[in-house]
Length: 196
Image (cartoon, rainbow, N blue to C red; front, side):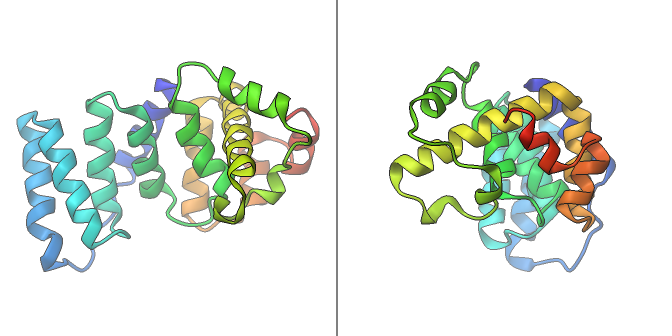
């Protein structure tokens, strides 16, 4: 899955967000983060960017910095979360967003396969588009497992760059089903019927 993190980082760097309104409350933290990255102090950079994100969570440059620092520290799951925010801060279904992160949390997904196998009935992905907060504990665990397996299958089919391009399309405002069909080369409905 490091390939996916690498692809997300490359695409995020190619689409560096334009400087928008500078928020004075986060400007010094952002500057400190970039300086720490340049100096090779990735932990200090990550800390500075996380602090800045606390004050301006919609600033894609801050997420890019935090994702870059996490990637360089080899914390791929954190890098993925931040780079997803950089590429697509909107239009990303919860199952895709959480599945990307959950797929990185372990070298294998035996835990997810076991959770899905033990479930009395699966949760379809179309029910996992919005926050998992409405689900009970057991349902939420099943939702994360289902999401991780779906994302792993997608990455296996289209690779890291295909997944990163899907996220970039979503960030550009393309409807999820249209972006999915374009990047995965079949409709979401057909893909879900094929074994997720």
